[in-house]
Image (tube, rainbow, N blue to C red):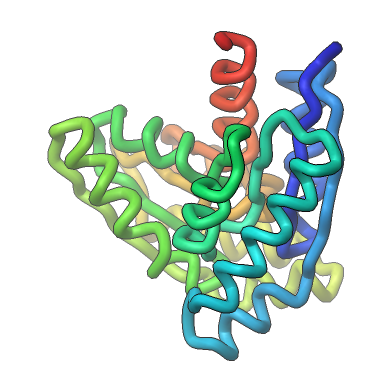
Length: 220
């Protein structure tokens, strides 16, 4: 029987991109999805990941594992420390949404343009890029941008404005041999538009996460 993968979401907009990524790369996987869409507002209110947030992530993860998950994938990139706490609390693989993309981007050895539509994501991910560059023993040229207003547009149903804003930001920040990394699952829908705007390599969190999770589980 194919592995059962628990997908834990903090935004509804993350659900369709990861479903599409699994459909493309691993349709046999059995998906179980859990949404807590109060998490982003609670994170902003708390000013960052605190002990209460860590306990909440541990509880969500244990619920997924108790329900039979063979692995857990979080789909929101702003909660790194809380996901690490959850990883330490269970015996099945627990993946951050961005760890596979971070490793792939750093391995390219090129400047990286990291874009996010949820500002706290950038604070969470910069240390992850720095740690991965140290692990791979390579230099890191990381440029970041918060695409203000894009997430609000998507939540309001204006996907066109969302995608256009991301593509415009990528064109300003990237270019040449720059690797564009789209930090959130909800941004994956703009990938083709970003490729057209920059002419370069574009990495998304859903596609890299599914590929890495499949590799880990099937290798075992």
